[in-house]
Length: 435
Image 1: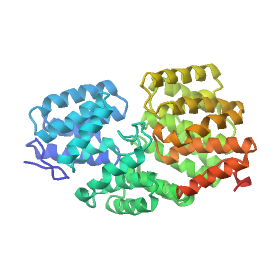
Image 2 (image 1 turned 180 degrees about the vertical axis):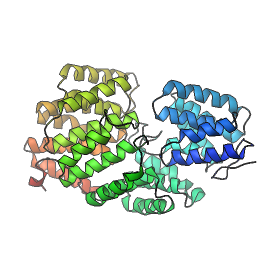
Image 3 (image 1 turned 90 degrees about the vertical axis):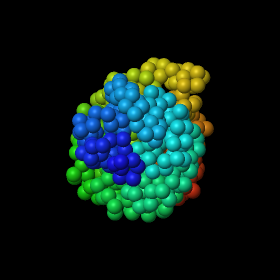
Image 4 (image 1 turned 90 degrees about the horizontal axis):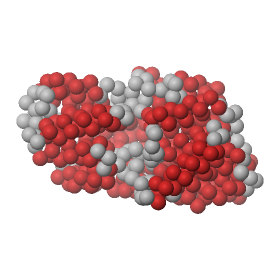
């Protein structure tokens, strides 16, 4: 029987289908462009290849093509009836994932890994800050991610993908030094992994290494096409480094050409959240508001995410606040409250609190913004995303302290960064006065 790169048997007799599938898997695991084409080629060689169909379903889901993803997953489930038990369970995980049952998908993944720890494509949706654990809404999700991955390390050895995922988990859990060592090993094995490059710049960010981070990405991104999965987000990191380095002209250039809804062809979730975060941080650093850009972010978010979605929620609220639409923001916060009461808001009351704080901040009501953010600050982890992304809300609180004349609160917040062994890599106007 033919086997994949992880030495797992595959239910296909076609070597060409196997080779195309392996190529597609590596492109997906590295977030490189063109992952769907090899899967299509694998299915052309063997129309009954269930795992290739399941992988195609996952690609469609990531790119917000939900109806097509469900159709592809249903087809994969039919094909899997003739496959091995391992492949049937693999497809079941994807069926739960695509079908809107993340808890069931994660439970099935844990059970599956006990028997097939090297099934990387079954494990992959449970990794990263946008994965089944990352978007679980649980306050201890960072440690939970490490606890899922660390016991599997002995099964993967020096596999470049696994090293990058474990490195990211460690960095997010405050173990940046350990994570740096792992991601450097990962990139030695596969220097063109976009996930690897992404995790590496997170390790630089955590250590306050803005110039090395900017320079590394500027070089790495030269061969990464605009249609690739992390194109927008990696350029967002470039802009964040430039903002910290005090280069606003370059920030706006990157935003207009790489990150804005008008320019980016990356995943919709990154377009919304990266655009909103960059515009908001630019204002914190003293840049003038860009009303046209904010309207574009709001309109794109409303078209793409007509219903609240974890992590997107808070960033859409920023757009409403920046657009000055107090009524829409109040209605949205009330809708989030209702979803929370109904048990349909996994991050709980954190998001409506942040939404209302954004409105307070944009009105210049610094004390109210402080009063809303302070009680939920330790719970912001529940909204999803990385530390580098969630720092936005700490930076907002820091700016509110400064503008309200509360230097002691600002110093206390900066000390919190040091407690996590992280440099205060922030770009907030007036910060030098309290350092």
